[in-house]
Image (cartoon, rainbow, N blue to C red; front, top):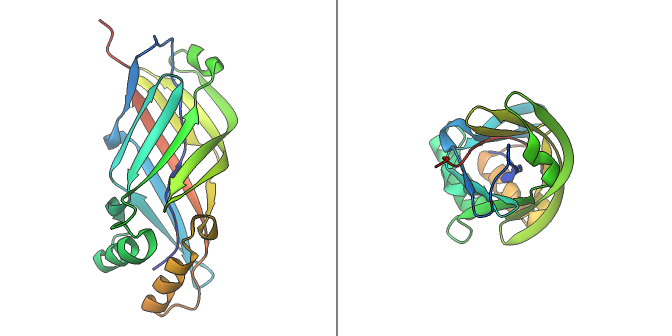
Length: 197
């Protein structure tokens, strides 16, 4: 068992376009080549990686948006997944997490093969609460769109989203001495450019 929060998330985290987009154009997230991963630490030094498998997002009208289906958490252990859904994320009440970020004009001129590193912030809505989180991103223009990746993990504090009690429940169920309540989240998002007519 462990601690986390999405992320997404997050966590978490992303945005933008490459080349010039016309008003109303919408860039779609390619779920199959995107990832949101968390690292949980238990017993003080045992780290484990988790991921969400169902992501949805787009870039449109100067904003990037991401939705994470929290029931898609994959820890590699079925009983752990179920406990996280029930006791940590409480997916019966909070089915998803979402993140959004403004797209800046300077990011729209990237040519294929070029990249830009930016320090910015995202708004993460998770477990009924919303927080603004700093993030460092690398935006890479690729043939069919844009890759947006975290340069450094986004740190999510369970208490900021009212999830510290859920972590304590997981700790007790797993009979662990401790589970970390701050979770690093890594993100890579692949946005596909709108088809040109």
